[in-house]
Length: 297
Image (cartoon, rainbow, N blue to C red; front, side, top):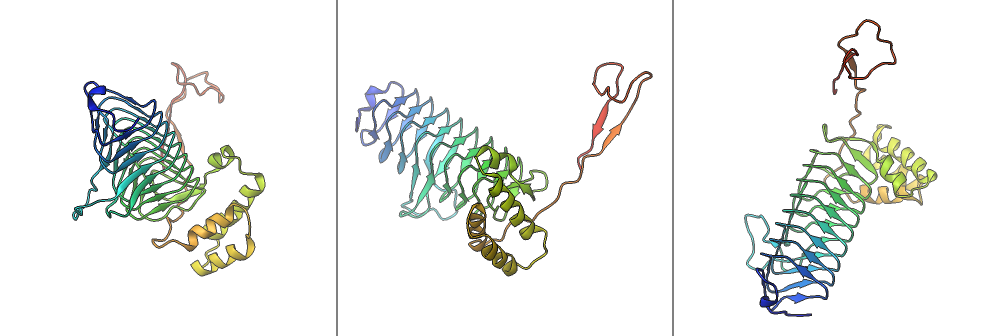
């Protein structure tokens, strides 16, 4: 159905100039402005605001308090801004904000099958792929690109114009100020790369050979103490197919440089107390047994 009258939605304001698909559910106190398209099967909970210049695909679930299509947070917002284009099958939880692109000809893009948790923010001109998870309070600055199957931990912040490669895992509270190559893990405490995203690779069906090659490439990039041009040359000459090719292409196109590696130290354990009769295998926290403190270092 297109251009449905606002009176058909009790307690909500839906512009007669909005295009609403079939089987769309709109909860109370929603605001749907003109120049909005909502695809079939979308479900909007209470207090959702969809502002002008927004296109939603099919079967998206938008939760309470979310605002999609707000003006860019920029000191020089033009009179005519761009759009927000969202794919299908996304779950966008409470109080998420997604802003329009700065230029009229551009769009902020969110792909398909993504999960954006509470208070996540996608700024103007971002491009987010498919099957991405953004955990609570994670934030993307303007012009950020996020590849497919990226997991962005809680309260992680990504500086404007940075890129995060596909299958990367970024830990909670990380400060991403340079590009994150695909397939790696970024530690939230140090904001450094600490290895490959092995769990994500296995869950995504990468073969043992793919993982072996990625390990070899990782050592070349971060452990061989080569120059940047030597790294790229070595990767291009020795890996002509498989996942490493995607890694090489990403490195070749970086303009901000990549996050450095920072190896995590082993976590020491300090035993505070040992009661009489306790054996070495008994490490429960019940009364009469020992307690440990683990220092993060």
